[in-house]
Image (cartoon, rainbow, N blue to C red; front, top):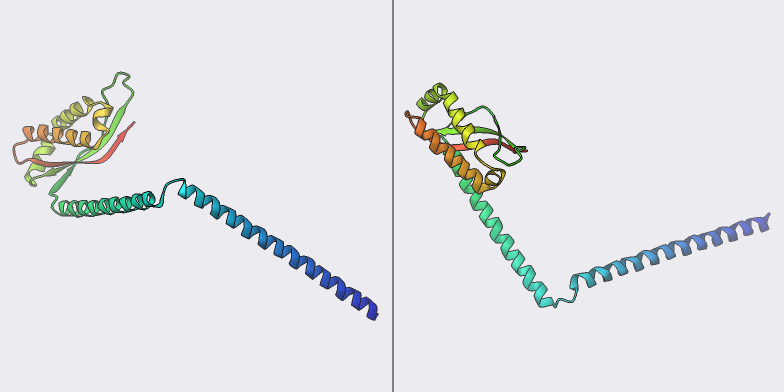
Length: 185
């Protein structure tokens, strides 16, 4: 009985040694793998460039990102000031028009709101709604995809619509055009 207990203890010790050896091999393998990965990343990052070029590039990147963030903040402040100064808005129904193209397969879906100089103008716009819609449709259908897909193009269309509508109305003027939906397909 005593011999059996000794044999069991020896087998347990041998099993424990095997497990600890296996664990040690796994740990060593993971460490070696991590070192290889670090080496590869270091070689790729250095890539033959000297440290000065890398530090200059990172400095330029930092400066340009700082400048861009500063511009975005000032633009956001200007936009928030403009939003607080917006006059009365007059929403128009959605316009779905074919764009001018050779194939004739492009169309624009746009919803527009007009910024008015005063409340009295909204009554005149109600009375002249069919004429306003006609003029806006004519302007939008005369544009190509290339003309309206850029920010400048949208601004040009907006200015053209505003000028046309201001020529029609007499009780005030349209101060701004806002596209609340602008889908080109």
